[in-house]
Image 1: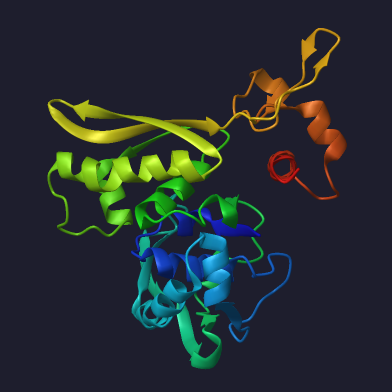
Image 2: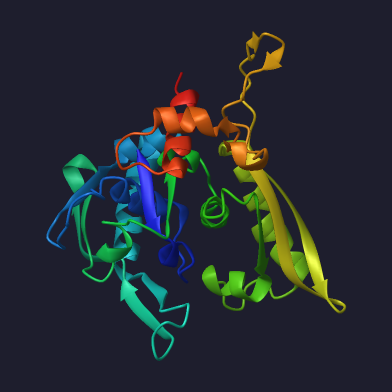
Length: 285
């Protein structure tokens, strides 16, 4: 199950709990990105499905699902419109995630409809979007870890990203929480990095950067974890490791030779999408 989000939504300002994130991502993974979708389409997820994908107990999922669904109806998201300055003015759109939430008690099922404003950020995406597998974040128990993971995979091809701390606080909607940098690192960044390293396909390292004497930025270096499966040698040459995120010049993407990517590409599929699909297929073997 794949998640597709526009980059504007990846960088938007919002706050969701872990259970709310799981509901949203499970439903987003059902959105058809190759067809025009109206705001009348109903998506659903059950407590049993949430429990299965997150590795939690069904009883716990049942207990949390209804409350999370009710909160989700009230959650908003702030999206920057025209962030590159192509229009006359930079605008901030404040909208909700969903227009309707239905909870079926006997089945432990949540059904929802996305708002009309949200749909362009989830479907018919042809450029400036981020893609990852739902399984990459399903077992994370930190909402900050899920958000940070999305911000990193948005720059997957680069393998590094530097963000301004004030911007990150706004994106996570932390408001007045953790004003001291030591608390911000202890309760937000460090647990998020630990969970990304434990549960996702990425390894991540990070360091802080100062402007003068003040810590103002965080710099992340990351890549695909090397497959634990032994690689066969071919006439003295090591076979390219699928899952090794290093890019060796222009001849490879995510550690996969460009020749392999081009030979494996499906009609209309970009090189990056092909490489990510090959990585997904390699994990399932």
